[in-house]
Image (cartoon, rainbow over all chains, first blue to last red; front, side, top):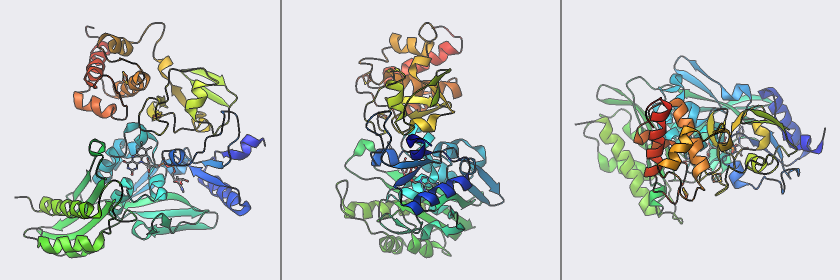
Length: 293
Length: 154
Ligand SMILES: Cc1cc2nc3c(=O)[nH]c(=O)nc-3n(C[C@H](O)[C@H](O)[C@H](O)COP(=O)(O)OP(=O)(O)OC[C@H]3O[C@@H](n4cnc5c(N)ncnc54)[C@H](O)[C@@H]3O)c2cc1C
Ligand code: FES
Ligand code: FES
């Protein structure tokens, strides 16, 4: 094989992709898996010095691996291939019940980014501001990790262990994400605050899926971006809400639950205090949405 | 490496890990596609990849093998396409740097939506930055083009 052939692989299927990555890991060859490239190409200077020179890093292109770009509806679970793009999420009629993910998808960059950016890429990048991750958490996503050693399933809420630290091993690919289809009458909402137009503030985002029995909140799941070292669920808020009546909620108690869940930081874009304020306001907004006048 | 661009199959000598943008502008000589930011923010490098608008600065050439690529050069057949003519007539292009990307983003929209409203047009070009026109003339040009493409009066 030529030098170039050694540095760019396009596996035909998931098995071949796993074998290729395993081999590169074993031999200690510097490499990246690449899907849409919307994080990788921006972050790392992958590009060779000229259009014909081989690059320093070997790439395994999974953007066309058939098993990764498919999805399948299985009762109240939908299995989304890791290579499903945000544009596919927005456009596929079968995925419309995942309203919170569809709405989040509309907010991921612009259409050019949505057409390339994948769910697995969003998960693996592990940005504290992962919009797809936030929505997937609200949909109780389970991550399917695949390698030559086998396959394992990890709940997305257990996947992150700290800033950019995840449970994924170097030879594992995100093969799929299983999400729970919310009840047809579930409350689903997506809110992203702080746009390009207001560059002084960061983009705090909240994904919510809440199911009720009449007035009572049966199940509440959230994913929030930009208020902690990782995009994260809101476990205290979820526990606070479940079993309570949607009307007349104790808002001070709700705020306290939010405070227990978030750990915002000061950075160039915003202050911790401002982010905490926005986090509380977004959760209150969901609470209001649950008990419309 | 083989790339199908604007309906023609090209044999190009390039690294599959070069950016598609560089291969289009370099060995293929298609300099209509512009580079603004190189980071997916400005949209001036927008092309269609299998019919979908993407930033050529973020796609690697090897990833585009086997796909159909459309660049701004592929819009006109002998004479300017109606979409292009409308940009000219309606002041949708001033300095012209954003124009190839705008045209491709608009083309992607008009292929799916024959009569888009202002909001749909603005969403479709939200990833394309223009520093000259203030966008309204671009929106008008795209609307106008939709009418012309539907066989209406120009
Ligand atoms: C202009 C711009 C705007 C953006 N806006 C947003 C936004 O609003 N919200 C947001 O959340 N993100 C945003 N992003 C970030 C990015 O688009 C998303 O994170 C996207 O989902 C990344 O997916 P990808 O397929 O492009 O990933 P890639 O860049 O291909 O890969 C990202 C990482 O994931 C790994 N990877 C990819 N697929 C797999 C797999 N199947 N298994 C294992 N590892 C894998 C790669 O090795 C790499 O480490 C933006 C990016 C740009 C350039
Ligand atoms: S040059 Fe590609 S988006 Fe700006
Ligand atoms: S016409 Fe100059 S940037 Fe749009």
